[in-house]
Image 1 (cartoon, helix red, strand yellow):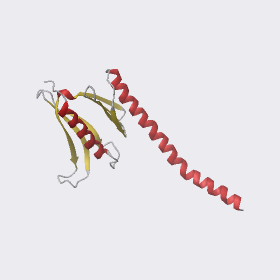
Image 2 (cartoon, helix red, strand yellow):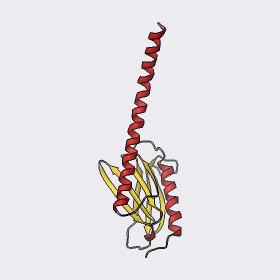
Image 3 (cartoon, rainbow, N blue to C red):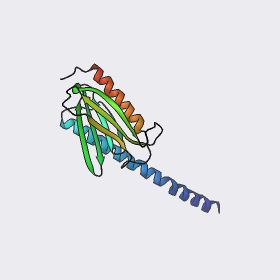
Image 4 (spheres, rainbow, N blue to C red):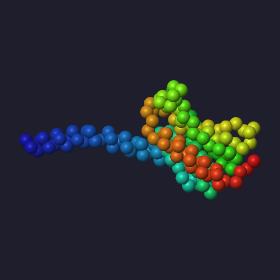
Length: 163
């Protein structure tokens, strides 16, 4: 009787654990694909990513030596790739769009906005999160956009501008 109960217990435990293991493996594979896409994008332009982050369907990285930011995002099976030369950028700012005007409203979008020295060039927006097609809850995107806003602004402050 004890052997039968032990076997049933082990089967129940396995049934509970297997979905988590499969989800973890799937997330690791997605993360690796995002990393490969970002690194491939940089390598095609003869640059090397020195720092990067990936989340959901997006990834961002920087070539510190050449001051180039690379960004990839896939929305509705359409890939967006962006390369930004920080020597052309005057400033970078974090945009947090909320559903209500107050700061307590639910976040709709998180973006990084790059303003060029050349005023004829329009601002470049990198979308980190959009409630319309990302998950309904944030899972680190706010910290990620703030982190990369700081990384970019720190890099801009030491880069010789191209005008």
